[in-house]
Image (tube, rainbow, N blue to C red; front, side):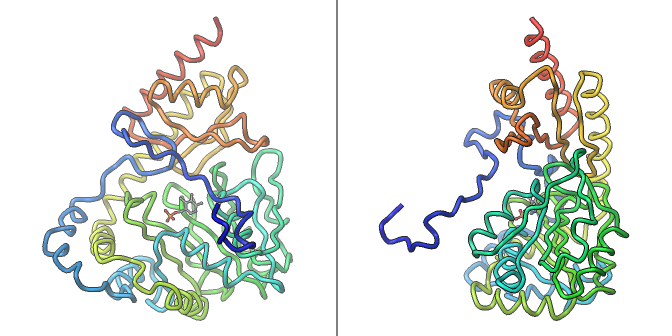
Length: 357
Ligand SMILES: *Cc1c(COP(=O)(O)O)cnc(C)c1O
């Protein structure tokens, strides 16, 4: 830390991203919930030299074509759509502009690690509401709270979901507060709250191209909500960095929307593979939280959570371990291809066999 960093930023506990090793090709990477499938053929074609040559020009700060395409895909109007540089960027804006002294925040105590970083960054008072014993969220804890509410649905790293009627109860009982549903994993079998944005002006749904659309490296997130909420986000984007979605990402995302069926099919494959992996792990004695996401949260009484992570890493398989004592016995495992999961399962079997000796 330099002596120039001003006081309020000195104590920030920054987010720790999952490992992205330099020699990536040597690893089976099941640690950051990326898609194991490449972007669709149209995306690769869109990133051509003609588009690259246009890089001398600024990109469209309104993402006009992309906004029209996405609005049509989700059955909303362009004025209900906002894009930014990854959904992390949108969550940052949300904590910056919809949370404050009169509107403190609330989110689950075990959830996406970035929420508490943003709360600290923007000096927002935040209550972290404990999960139930089985790691599910009790929607009643959020009814009538009078705080800005941020819930990942499916939740991370547990993969558990709230139903739409439960989300609707939260919306109805907090009419004076923004309720944010972070749907980073919604395409792997959960119900989206997007249709509720037509009925509730306090709902903001946030999604990303990083997980189900195989574009984590392109950095694109979007929000869908009432026109006035979207206008607020747009105002802040235009007050910081209006060109925050580069030209290549806009072209790639337009092409991805045109090939939506490809991504839907990949989503189905991942769900099948998730069920397959769960079944195999259960026969090895793992406890697995029921997941509607492209990851599972697992533990096994026979082996310490961190130890399993370390031993798999030695075998060049990366999974995600969290040090928070409440979940330190667990690991989060991204669902990859069937081949990747078979390699993972084989390695786990070997490790458990060694442990028993
Ligand atoms: C991955 C993830 C994000 C961030 O996605 P980006 O669009 O890549 O910034 C947001 N929320 C949750 C719950 C996530 O898991």
